[in-house]
Length: 525
Image (cartoon, rainbow, N blue to C red; front, side, top):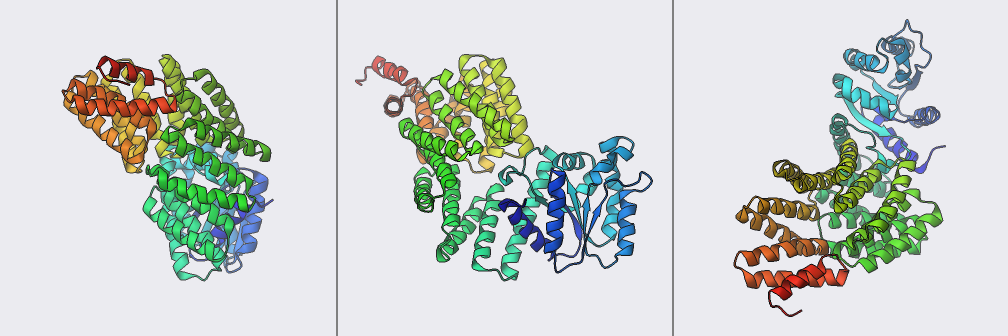
């Protein structure tokens, strides 16, 4: 059965194939029955080009895949598009099985290219990973990959670092083609809104946020003209996430509230659950845990009502972070374990990586560094496999904390520098705060006071710009005391007071410690 996401990808693949002359492409699909269904549907849609399907399953061991394709093209020389199925099943005929078959593709690259046809290979995800590792010459010839996976948002699931680079190439090719298509072809207004949204989404995945916003705003404007409330609501939500990533919580909240209103008006329960979850994260960042928890509980209720397992896993993870911030580690761990179970059940690798990272922080807080490091290494592996850059930056930051606690400052600083580089590259300002703060703590341990102050001052500046309550609390607590040590008592007291007020209002562990420091300094609280 062709799903709405499959339908969208089929339209995009058809448009792409009908407007280029030759090349090698992949279709990524894991279920054999869906492979046949998608190939049939794609052939039916390619009305402007002569298309044939070559199924290599059951091919004689005496015949190579290249020979079979050549043979078919000799009998049907007018074919322009060739859909090639089940090449991966020929591994049993080749010495070395899958790796041997994959390496053989390197030698087939030139003969396939000389055919001057559109060759579309249908492969499961694991086989594309093998090609990325063992057949780089062939893989580098692939111009586009169309994915028919259960959840399109998990399109990067299972990637190794080599394939991650190729996925970026595919994304860049995709947005370039969509931009060209918008300029060159005539679409209905509804189709145009859809293409604008896809372009914005593509640029967002490439972390090109300014370009993404430009196309989201065009999509938003057109969706309002044609009264497409659903795409308007989704665009508003996605715009908010870019502002949130940049630390502009006020603007993010405005777009989320507009999105929530639309989702409720049109009865979009799934979208409502998503937006409620995203609103909670704004209040969480501000340190308003009560309000954040209320939005999360409302989101969790909706997710369970409609059977949205992915959303339920996300809500459980985010609820855990409220309890963790309050120091209730037992309750936090319970929610995280429930979330991890769901993420693994549904194959949500991105969510699994995030939960593993968060579980590590519970063990870190308890002083069980070995267990914490194990969870972090598992999380880092997943983040790198799926190309989750912001997650990778967060995990590297947390790994550094383990080495710092062990007194291995050089290794800790290396992880922090790698983390900071990533957060700067993708423009994640809020992610820079804990990294700069942890670098400052290490420099302090190494008696480098000048570097300590410079790093902590920069972290505090970003926390002020973004309104990050946890950052203001933690960074302010340390910076205030360092300033006092450095003879800047007035500035230090001011920062400590602000940190105390934030911590007290949010119920953060450690607020009483700041109060005690201020009282020892003779300050009235």
